[in-house]
Each structure stands twice: as structure tokens, then as C-alpha cells.
Length: 147
Image 1 (cartoon, rainbow, N blue to C red):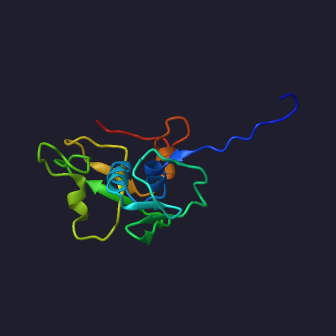
Image 2: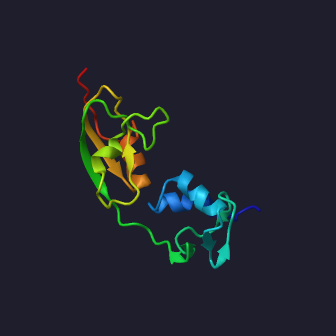
């Protein structure tokens, strides 16, 4: 095809779309989809990698409720020593999510990590694109660590 441009629309898997909308982690999205709880444009989908052609226009329902993009949340935590930066720890250690017990925050994920022995600023969000921008070494903010 000389002289013509082929316009390609990127497609994303359904689990990734749910995650990008800030509704849940990709792992949780995969679980919901495999359980048959997710509909795409009225059709039950059980494949987490099912391609979504129009990410913004697609109607997605989870357990018969419309899955609209979550309101972006940005949180700062002064992480205390002794907590690990993970949602669940297979060794049973306390995690940073203990600091949010009782709060109705919906799904949030840490932006970066601090190890168990570290303390300091740790950011959380439900906006994966913002988190990627913040952690990008080339374009993100300068960081200073005191060791």
C-alpha cells in the first residue's frame, strides 16, 4: 500500500483495562473474569486477555454493576520501619496496608517500594498511568535517599 497509512488502534486485555481504570489490581481482575463475573458490552467474558478494541467506549460490568473508572486517589504515607511494601506477605509479616485499616479507600497500590528496615515517604494511588510517570527514571522527579 504505497501512499496509504494503516491506522492501528492498540488493544488491551480485559484484565489490564480493569486495572487501568483503577478498579482493582490485574490479579484481582483476572480472578473476577475467570469467575464469570465480568461482562464486556453485555457478554460474559472468562478470558482475562480477551482483547478490548475501544478501551474508552467499552461497557464493562462487574457483578451486574457498571465498571466506570474510579476517581483518582493519591495518598502519602510516612512508612514506619518494620512493615513490608506489599499487599499480602506469604511470610505473615505486617504490610503497609495495616496503616490504612478501617479506611474505605478502594483499591490502591504503592508507587515504588521501601524495604522493611526503611522509613519515609511512600506514595499510593489507584491511577497506574500516574504511578508509571512518577517512577520513570528518565522523566520522574529526582529522589534523594539517606542511607
